[in-house]
Length: 268
Image (cartoon, rainbow, N blue to C red):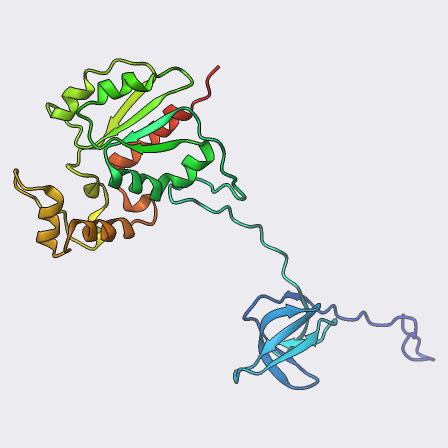
């Protein structure tokens, strides 16, 4: 209220404008009006903020109220709220289990045809298999698969998952698999002549896997056509190109995922 006799009402003081708080995210450019130093937020040290100017010079400033100018207007810098950490993802696309300790291997197993198959499965699903305590073993061929299964001695707590290369209708591999009748064994496969083909061509920077005539060793023929040197050199190139499940064809992804589910299912 104003008084004509005494001028402005001394008790009616204007409200001070609230200075906005701004999260000091890295890269935010502010100015210290006292020194004229203008720079981007770099980090925090001892409860203070470090600014770096365009010449690379760094200075430490206290986070006091209304201590900085942002676009010429006073602001109070505050430390940004901590962001929730995103879960780390394994090569297979599963959530990574942190602080994993190796556990005793379970009785169940996954069998694959050869060393290259085992290395590729380890590259993509190794984390998942260690979490579950499942061991992958190379068979070096499936010609004697029924006998090997009998020797292994399956049971509900001792399951076998078998990954077979070139599992297509009327193939030798399909005829062998047809002999197996065991509830504790699951055989899956992929249509490729060799596990190399289950890696997407773009991952190894080729347009397509070359067609190798019958009677020629497939790996040898591929390395000759592509100029990859010896087969061991070719395999290092193929395996080194795989960083996650995204580099693998869906036929192999589905086959291996079904095997892992089968051998890890809880038993009563």
